[in-house]
Image (cartoon, rainbow, N blue to C red):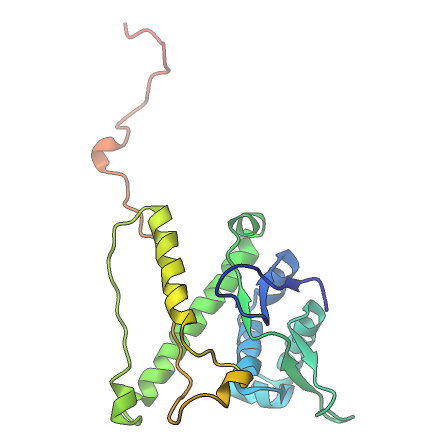
Length: 221
């Protein structure tokens, strides 16, 4: 496996998860690549042509980005399905983790590009669900939710909130092949998206300097 990714440690982390390092972050800093990895994880192995149709891009573009993802260790060729005419690809991992402030500071452009791509995909997934919502059975329509809460927290409290939310999610069945067979009748894929967005107050106007400031210790007359 390429050295772009490694498995993270810590609670609530799946065995087949990876944490981004600098090389992996740069490799995923493109919206098409983020979507390609997501499609392979969601639907299983596929070809560049089929993936391109889903994304609305040409097959050459999809093929190029798949090769770049392969070089970085995120996807690999599925030799059991492929042939001389058509290459099949599969995801190497099921989830990706990126929560490294120091790496984000070292690679600000790549970090921002990756995070913006993920945010755009979250918005797209929400819109897709909204478009399909009225065709779903009532029981599933009633589960749909878009809520937000305004909280006033310290950084430590915000971090604790995230950990508690992750612990709640971890109590439920993950969408993985080994758990699909044990799922009760009627179980379907459900996306749970969490976003903790700091909204720092702007400095009050009265606290801002109103004019040139004298140097400390300088005479006043």
